[in-house]
Length: 558
Image 1 (spheres, rainbow, N blue to C red):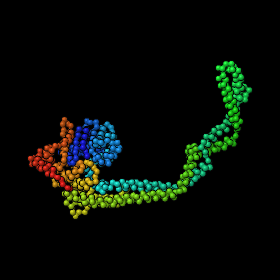
Image 2 (image 1 turned 90 degrees about the horizontal axis):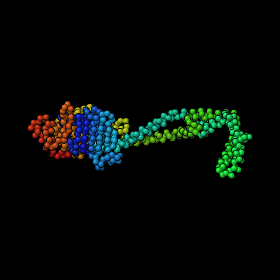
Image 3 (image 1 turned 90 degrees about the vertical axis):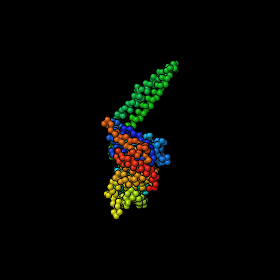
């Protein structure tokens, strides 16, 4: 349940810290006093849109914080703990709206997004307001209500998964079939390209080797002159370097026998002489291998032209051409097994259809079974709320298969005997919608996992007798969950376990909303004010005492 609410710089509130307990809490005050500010603040914690217009004038930011006590054995508590959220002393939720920049949200000690708050807090705090009464007439909301009553969470999840698999299988089959329409043209192209590459037989590195050979052939004279001249200079000529080094060695080696310091130099010269001779021999072999071969040069130019054309066509180098050849052959192989691939995709689509149809059928059966039970349960509560013969038939009609199944749900309403039931949206007034919503909430109480119900003036337009029944209903709901009700009706407020009063004051040109928790001694005066106005009579005060005394009697089974 919601145990603590702290608000700072929000709307007309400067600072507020409100402790809340179990049972039924009534929030009352004059019209326009700002009672719905509490609902707006809780809406922010549930992930509602936040705007800078909610920040109090003169403040840089607005802050709303709450402490939620989670059941020790709840799945949500375990999941939040597994996600690293701090829930040991309760779940702390915080929403900050900044005037000069983006707001911030915190959940269980860590940063969060508005979507995180919606996924977590919206399932813990349920707000029923005039807006929710309008959503009660929406077919998708009606479908969700029926599924919640039928406890269809698992069948709905199976339906959504089956429909997604069905859509994916059909998309794959359609794409494959679309490709098949151009399959003949694609096959011809692949065969042509593959034949072209197979005829060329490119090998990795071939283009680089041919380019190097072409340069040698094109510059044969220069290569021969340089290499043959190098051999002449180093070894074959009359004054070759090798001979001159040998002459130096002949002079130094006898002297090295007399002075050992010359020995290392002689060794280095011996190595140099051997290296020069080796280099000269290599240059000679290279020179003798060079020949001017215009025919070979022409062959190389033609081969390189072919390789370059294929590289431009397919991309990359000669090595990439070899890989492309393998890929084309593989794709041709797949086209050759097209019939088998088509049959496999058709089988997958058929199986996905069967799974989706089965999931939709199971969901429909569950909904049809629950529809009658919901109608009877809501009808019974409506009779207690002043509709002697009201009925709320639940119509289930077929529609195209979708992620929520193949059913369209419509709540019909027949407030009076002898009248044909018609869509709730077309005939129900605001007061009637309020009572229908309360009846639906009570019907869902068994399956609803919400910890805190917030009712924002849903009792509007009700008379005294009906209001008392509403108060008893809310008291009954609060037996196993926390209920907050914002009300103008003393008959409802009298049943509260705790009472909160909202007042609006103006001082020095500044308006301020204050929210205070009333003691038991202060409650009669507030009930009397709700009965008779700002200056209640003695009779009103006595009536208020009697109402509170009667409300303390056991509610009994509803």
